[in-house]
Image (cartoon, rainbow, N blue to C red; front, side, top):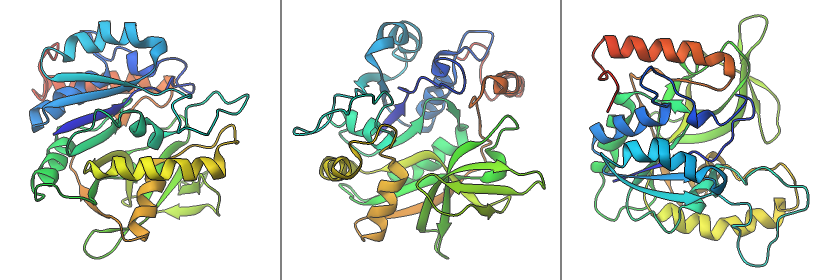
Length: 300
């Protein structure tokens, strides 16, 4: 099974290329821990979605390390990588979004895979839960997706708002609705979610499940993206900041009856570097996990 890592974002809020920021004394990045955990869980290949602008630096750091333990491939998220008949509007600088990032790797996805963000730490259990789900599916399954969901209170930072997909489920833990939102505590200590695609803000309970973009997919998702991306571009292609988001795509597929999505729970604790001020806490947390024996000194 494959691991797809979205690592093309330059991390403007963090103040630089956060995927290439050392997080331990050995110089490892959060991406190193992600690959390490996924490999231990059973995944046997990784595809990094990056940009051409930092290809050389990426391959000489992260690539050089992970290639020793797992099959490694690269895809490139490029603004110009859009279907024939469309063009990038003048003034557009940001990538087209997470769904486009997966679309960029369309020729490299050959089997069931999971998708993760390059700047998040998910923890070993999250990968084991994801692997177990995909391994349990019949061969050539299609439309049988899952999301490893975290408690919203375990995914926040004190340094500002965060983007999370608020998940709504039925009694069998099937996703019924997913709302990509900006989430932040207000002055009263309540967690408030503001939908990114419009709509009224709403309160979220401390233990409510949210998506951290750790999705489990069958390879049929690529066919859906090939078919749907042109339709999205017809509606939003002339906008300078609109993003083609994978949670929105999944939400559409579920409501159209073309896919189902299970919400999987994990004991893992998330942390990440949404803002520069988050780094000291991440460094400290990793050091504690090494002391507990969860990771080796130096990782590799």
